Structures are given as structure tokens and as C-alpha cells.
Length: 130
Image (cartoon, rainbow, N blue to C red; front, side):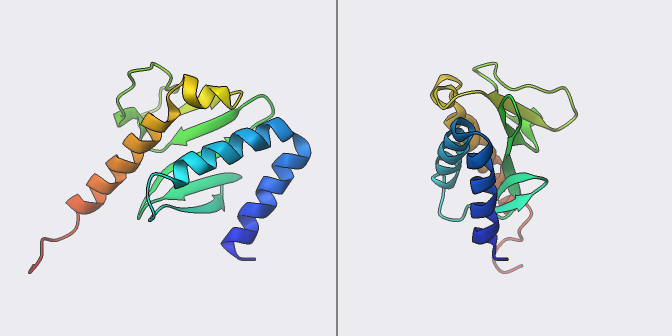
């Protein structure tokens, strides 16, 4: 099964279980994919994992909420105080409605996570001519 088929199958499963969560996941997906043309998605760990050379966030639907996960979220600035978690690296934002995307300024966190991955990727690449 191709990646797009797997993504569509997961989205359809979510829609069948909870149309409101499907709307939330679909909107989050659009926000994430809009941060850059190099962003890719795949079904992994039971949700959608987004990468730009390296993974930078994931979206996972649970019974009561949708979780936007950041693998290296502990390094993200949190001006809105919406990041949850106490692990060494990971942080997440719990979303219960489409309105939470704007209310919790999710786009800023997604852009910061995307930018951080780009900075780390460019930092490990050799300079031209090396």
C-alpha cells in the first residue's frame, strides 16, 4: 500500500469513529503540510508522522483528544504555556476542537519545530567543497 493510501485509510478510520476528530486532524494536517514543500507524511506509531528530512511532529487521535507531538519539544519556546510533558525531549499539545488550533497558536509551534529540524539538518551537513 502506498503512503498516500495508508494516510487516506487512517483518515477514513478516524472519520468513521469521530467526524469531529477527523475535522481536527485534517485541519492540523493542512497546517503542518503548509510549512514547506519538503514536508512529507507517513503513517507511523498509529498516527501521522511529519518530516522535513527528519521527523519534526506527529498527530495522534485518541478517544478524548488529538495530540500534536514534538519529538524534540523540550527545546521549543513555549510562550503560550501549552506544551505538556516532562520527558527529556518530547512535548505535546492536547487539542479537543478545531478552535484549539488558533487558540493555542499551534501554527507557531509547528513552524518552530520545523525550523529546528532544518537547523539541525544543515548543521550536520559538510560545507561546500568538503
